[in-house]
Length: 166
Image 1 (cartoon, rainbow, N blue to C red):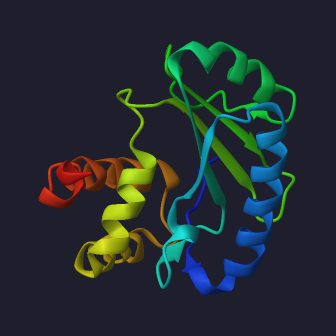
Image 2: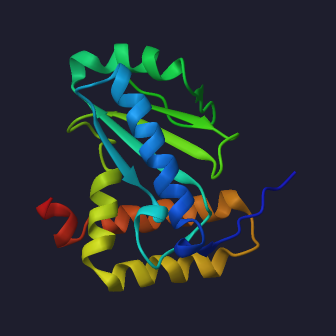
């Protein structure tokens, strides 16, 4: 069965997303006190369109990665449909409101990109508007097709001067 993508303004989810982020940042900090915990994704970007889920990036030193995987596994399900490497794991909790995704990355590794993408979209409103246009084009369409287009957009965003300065 095809999953359909739908978007709403970030303002619709802002308060719930910020409260859930604060709760989970505190929870994660208890088991990973040295982790850098960031609110990423579209709910972290005022005025943007979002699917309405909360994304958290947990950044750890390479030597802490295996311990972090174990610690986060106690709170969240492994996102089986996501990439899995020696420096990246994705977790999820679909029971929260809004649904939660947690991206665990080793600092300065290949997929330590989520905070940078957020910061570039925060510093350049034209990029945010371009991303919102992409989302509008996929409203009500297949989630997999949207994800492919989103990945192309992010590859382009990673080639921008703003991204490369971070």
